[in-house]
Image (cartoon, rainbow, N blue to C red):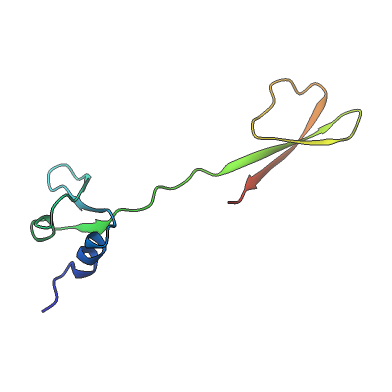
Length: 90
């Protein structure tokens, strides 16, 4: 009979980070040893951290009409018209 967590155990043995749900804390903890797979009720492969989206802010110069993309919002926009933001895709 196959162990109920066989796929997760294999992933852990292959080097993936796995976690178990603490019974009292209701918090996910890193699995450090194989025995945890038998004692924990809920285990999972640790999710990849979500990367925050990055944006470029687009401005148009009032007199020149030349556009500018900036990784940060401008503080002084007296000579610039804010056009919007564009998400940077990696």
